[in-house]
Length: 235
Ligand SMILES: [Zn+2]
Image (cartoon, rainbow, N blue to C red):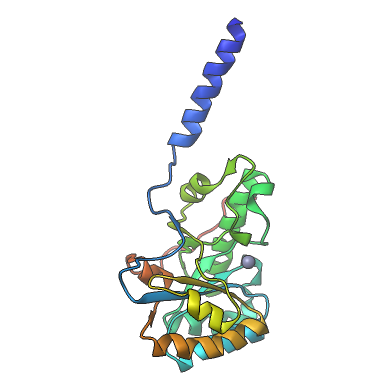
C-alpha cells in the first residue's frame, strides 16, 4: 500500500513539474481573430508545388494583399531563395508547418520538437539571416490526441501562436458564405485552390474585407527579422 502511495505522489510531482514549467499562455491557440474588425487572413499550407506557390504569390501581388504561408521545412530549396525573398518583400509572412508533415502526436515528443526546430534552422540557412517562425500550424491541425497535448511543448520551443482556421472551403461561394470578421481561411498549394482564390479574392475585397497577415490579424508586434541564424544544437 505504502509504495502505491509513493508512486502516486511521484506521479503527481512529475505531472506538476512537466505541466507548470512551460504552460502556454491564454490566446496561444487561435482559430480566428477579432470578430469586431473587418479583417481576415488568407493562409496557404504545405508548399510542395513551386508553380502553384508562384501563381498564388502573383495573385497576392495583383490584388495587393499578403498571404501567410505555412511551409513544410524540407521544401525550402536554395533554388527558390529569390521567390521566398520576393514573398517576404511583398509583406507576406512565413510560418512553421514542421519539417516533414507528420502527425506530431503520433511520434516521440523529441522528434516532434525536432520537426519544429529543423524547419527554423532550414529557413535561416536558405535566406542567410534569421527569420523567426513565430506561428505554427501543426499538420492536419492535430496538436492533441489520445491524452497527448503538445501545446506546452510548442510554447517551450519558441512558438508564439498555434494557428488553426475557421474557413476551409475550396468552393468560392461556400468560402465567401462562411467568412466573417476575423476569419482565418485555409488553402493549400493545389491548382484547385488557386482557381478558388482567383474567384474568391475579388469577392472578399468587394465586400470590404481587409486582407492581412495572421500576425496583423492578431495584433502582434512586427516581426524582428535578422540577427544570428538559428542552428539546431544536436540531432
Ligand atoms: Zn499541411
